[in-house]
Image (tube, rainbow, N blue to C red):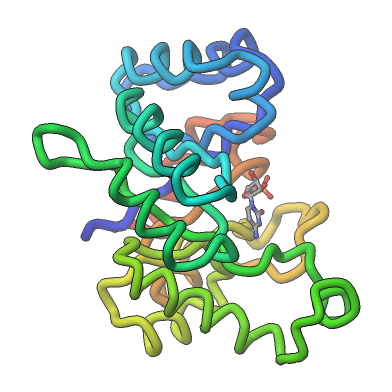
Length: 232
Ligand code: C5P
């Protein structure tokens, strides 16, 4: 499995997204579309980006009863996205139903990735509000193992956790890792960050990079630097 850089397209509208994409005249990109853009523009934004030849990670984090998730995934699969995700907290049964829904008639399907515990959930909140009385690192690994049992392809995690995930779920199990910054960048609201080079050393399969590329003076150059440091 080749390594790739996924650009987080955290734009509010199609117009802003297309303006950004128009800067890239040579490369075919892998783009993460999140809830904000998808809910604002609907499936058309996915179709437009696919028409331009880019790949899409549709980051909608599904979590519902198995039947509902199965049907929703079938719709996303027809949209021809390349990667999508769900909450592992929905249980193994839900994850299996999701995977089933994604299968296309020709036998192909998008990659399916699990979110374990969100990085915004602290140990304290998990214990007090969710009544989970275990160290959060253990919970993350348990959810990753559940995703693996359900047949999913990998998890979203910090580059710093990639090694531990692979140790517990096998080296083929994918790690999709946000929280990436160049040495010279502003960290912003991210807490634990690594550089593209370090993420590569730590075993990430895909890095998700937003502001270091989208807010760069020269986004194309910043993207190329990421690819050079992470993929080559
Ligand atoms: O701009 P930045 O590089 O921080 O963007 C990272 C992207 O990855 C954002 O779309 C953010 O929502 C997402 N993400 C994250 N941390 C997680 C899961 C997703 O930063 N644990």
